[in-house]
Image (cartoon, rainbow, N blue to C red; front, side, top):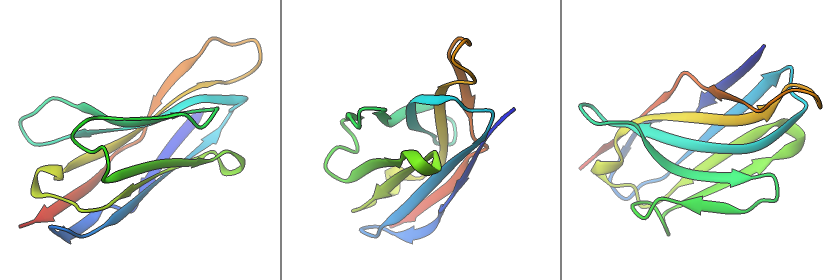
Length: 121
């Protein structure tokens, strides 16, 4: 019923930038929260950044000052601008959305398929 499609990953040198996008589609009444997580090989998935409907944002300490999350409510899309990338930022990045399918439904959680970000030293 709901799909999250990420794009924008790739290979970049250390110090470079990438911009990730995640578009939500399907049966959506409202989106309460959108966020980005990442999972490096052999590690658990970790939260990176999040944005609420009031445009309040939060960041993990490891990316604060380098990454910026934003959203376009009209397009149900969230972005992650990643600057000053480091090799330790290498991971599969996943989009997450917490939304209502209708005014009468409970909040549901949805994940995208992930996009690979590789930062070379």
